[in-house]
Length: 454
View 1 (cartoon, rainbow, N blue to C red):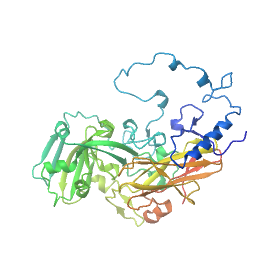
View 2: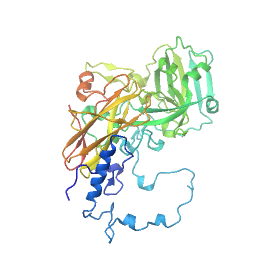
View 3: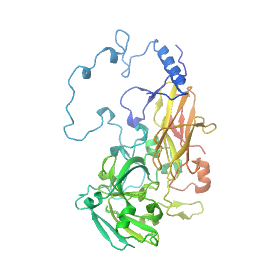
View 4: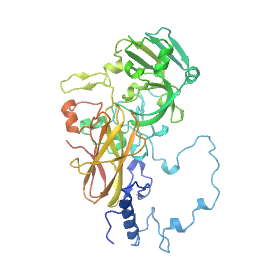
């Protein structure tokens, strides 16, 4: 029987996350008004084709009666006693999801230990990154610090320098907010037109969590900070690199900057800065200082080693752009994306993530023909300021080559640039703050690869 192009297709996950199954059926949520007829027709076509002979496979075994053995034969888990409550007290993912994990960078800056791991964006749903899959970037390795011995200091242009314990900080009124954190070097390899295979490597230095803590402005006011003349704050970490970053006071007085101890409903993980880290929404991740031990109020940028040597942008004229903290509007299609395989023609839900350091995402457009034509995507709720936003759109693949792209627009009107537009301003020798449109080539055999359009 000839396959109808509107029937649901099948997608194989990227090699890192392939679970030893030949394919997985696309899962459809309840459609909104205006999409129901389209979805129903897709399912009707799939049902009609189901009468055709189906090859036996691990994913879809066929019984002697001609039906699906996974339905006709009652499985063990439907007949027996299951496992007791988790014996070690802390839950873990299914063993069948064991390949969904952070993966190390093969090429970015290394110390004596691995310093970078990438979040598996292509395997995540919604906008929240599980704490155990949150990307990592270390400048001198991570530590599991005894919170009873950790101290947080406030000095500089303040009336009363303070030294606070964790207990004292956690007694104060707290807030919880969802925010993305992105390393300034995310997508760095793409500057050099290096086609790393999956979106885990192109965009995986990105995560989004619910952070809980005390607004930094509250702590500065407790110390009597000079908010009129104190224009900047130096944040310092307690790890071996003594990571230090200048934070403009204008960000702090807005109340957005947090001294955080909580992440996704629990205490921070050690690799994410336990027991205390800075949260600076919309700003590159290096300024979210981990193992936070001190803030110092000053009247000028501090020009520390991490601001004068690293995390500066090389411009076409040979000069460096310093204090380029803002993470501008950006997006990426995560499904289908590099390393995945479309196994059938038919319907697919194209899905991805968008974010902006300037506020909320207003719109995302998706193209399947390399940017010649664009279609506005659906923004899935919630749409929050300086947080990841999930988008999706319907696509029927006809089996021909296609180039899938996404283009985000934030509430300020900023439009995510093409590589040509970005390089006209930034040149070709940069490392940081690459927010250009990402392209995925779907080949006729269904394989998806990373390509770059000039």
